[in-house]
Length: 204
Image 1 (cartoon, rainbow, N blue to C red):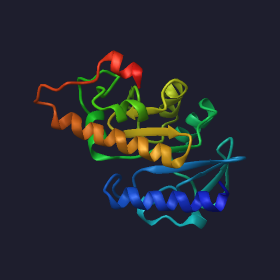
Image 2: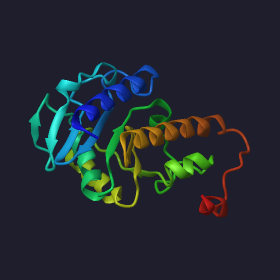
Image 3: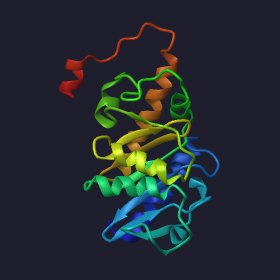
C-alpha cells in the first residue's frame, strides 16, 4: 500500500470507528506500518476528524519526520512493531464495553474474556490484561512489549484494548470483535452461558 493510500485508510477507518461510538472525543489512535517507519494519528486528535496531510510520520525508532506531533501512546504501537515482524497496523480504542471489562476486579489476567464465539477465538484469541499505568508512561509500553510477541491483542487495565494486525482492516475487525464480545460478556453475566470448549477452540 502506498503512503497516500495508507493516509486515506487511516482517516476513513478512524471516521467509521468514531461515527459508531467506538472511541469518544479525542481518545484512541491508529497506526499503519510503512517501508521505513509508520504513520500514526496525532496527539489530541479526534478519529472522526483526521486530516491525511497532518498524520504523524515516524521512522522505525519512533522519531517524528513530518506532520503533527504523535499521540503520547506512540510507544504502544512501536512495541508491537518491534516485537511482531508481521505486524502491519495497530489500533487502540477506548471502546465502552472493553474498557468496562478492564476495570473489573475479578478477571483472569491471562484470559480476560471467555471463548464466547468462534469469531472471537479466530480474530482475537487469548486476551491478556496489562497492569495499570498512566497513559503515556514508558512503563506501560514496556509492559505491553512483554506480551506483544505472544499476543496480538491486549487489554490495558482501566484504559482499553490494543490490537495488532497484518493490515489496518484486520486490526480494526479484530478490535471490533473484541468490543462485541465484551458486550456479550455483560449481557450473559447473569445467565448460565455455554462457552466454547478447549477442543472446539483448538479446531479453530
